Image 1 (cartoon, one colour):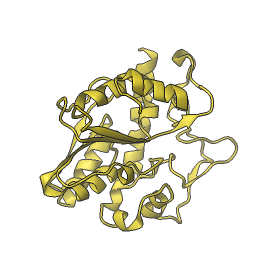
Image 2: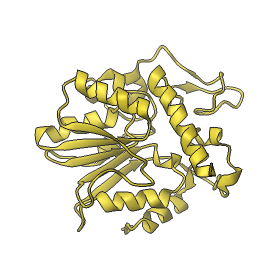
Image 3: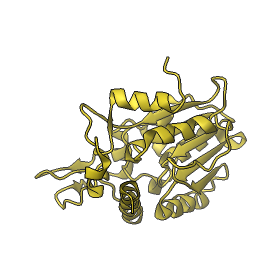
Length: 244
């Protein structure tokens, strides 16, 4: 098994457990002691249970009124920002959310695009897809769908068909970010119509110079797979985008 496959399998395992438990270690609700890390498996990383899922999401910038309009079970505290807030989504748009989890950003976008638009969530974790699809069915969302896909291999969406690609703290978990951005470029509408809005983590110095030296457990920390800002921008450029 290659190093990248080992990391992907560990990410699937970790986020499958998050989907089943409803608890994430990647949100701002974490108290970390004695070197515990996000998704590290350290028992000292504990959710502050006094906070609701909506309150936890609000800490990274979500609007509480918006959160009250979507399923509570779509909020897992796994994001690091609010891409829907900055994406200028409008009614009728086609949106793709990469690493959609239980569907928080999908449902927020769906409320904006309404019946004339559609939102497609992409995730590679079966448990997350099951949870998201149940959330959609239980809450009457007819303008969303959730598809299984590996975003750095091939996003299961037609080329030149998407108005906005969003993603929330997921691309840092991929092992080949250039391939991921190439796939994003492929599915976006051409001629400056399509756009992407990404919330993600960058680091002051490169952590993973050699992927073979990385422990897959640590990759799930949402940190070990992060790039410096410069390398992140280079990955976007190498994926086909022009930086203006």
